[in-house]
Structures are given as structure tokens and as C-alpha cells.
Length: 154
Image 1: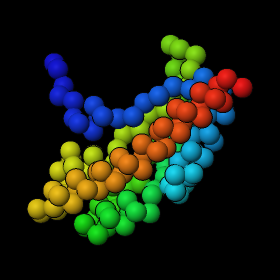
Image 2: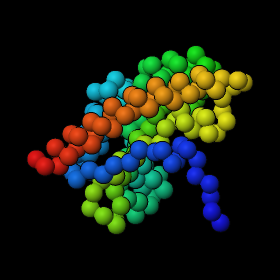
Image 3: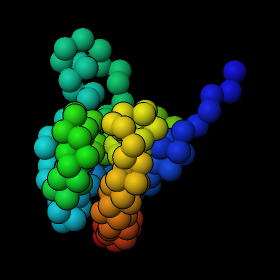
């Protein structure tokens, strides 16, 4: 059975870093903050699962939950209920299959569109919100790739 890939999943941002997981998590967080995203929370999913379920075979995975004030402002201007689908989350994780740290981001605003969570006829406003989010996250991603490569060479 083939599943259709939504634009949100297809256009997700992904890169790898050749640095330790312990260095990658704060590095990715800071790159978001330097682009004016506010950190809401950094959570280690693997530690949470181990602590609550006792399972210790989960690969290291951290969520960096951030919110950009312009994105939040524009989302709630469309409809305050959209705030429940914010903020943005970037995941940093390792896999057994390689020796790099993965950084992955799925756009919350594209998900709003793809999930059909927009109220009424606000397609143009959602498109503008997606564009704004994309512009802000492109800055983050360019810097992660640029500075991550430099950090990896140190």
C-alpha cells in the first residue's frame, strides 16, 4: 500500500551534523534563537520514555520547541485556535545506521494547511503565514548547515 506524501512531509527540512549529540542539541537551539525564535522547551524524548516507561533502548532524540513572534502573531490574527498547532518543533536524533546527528523540521504552518485546520476562506492568509515561516526557518537552516559544517571541522 502506497501512502500519499503531503507537501508538508515532502518539503520537510533535514540535514546531518558531524558533531556529538550533546553538542548538536544546544547548537541547533541557539541557531533558532539567533533567528529570533524563542525556545519554549527542549525535551529529551529518549530520557522521558526511559523515565516513564522504563524502556532504555530508544535512540537519543531531543525536541527543540520554538516559536517566532511574527509567526505566532499572524497565526492568531487568522484564528486564535491555530495557536494550538504552534509552536514549531525541530527534532535532533541519532540512529544506529550511521555516525551523524540528524536534524529534522516539519513545518507547523504547512501542517495547518494540509490538515485542513484553517477556518473558512483564509487560503491567502495561510499561504502568507507559510511563506513567513519558511523565510524565518530558511535562515535557521542555512546557519545550521553553514556553522554546523564549521563546528564539525574544528
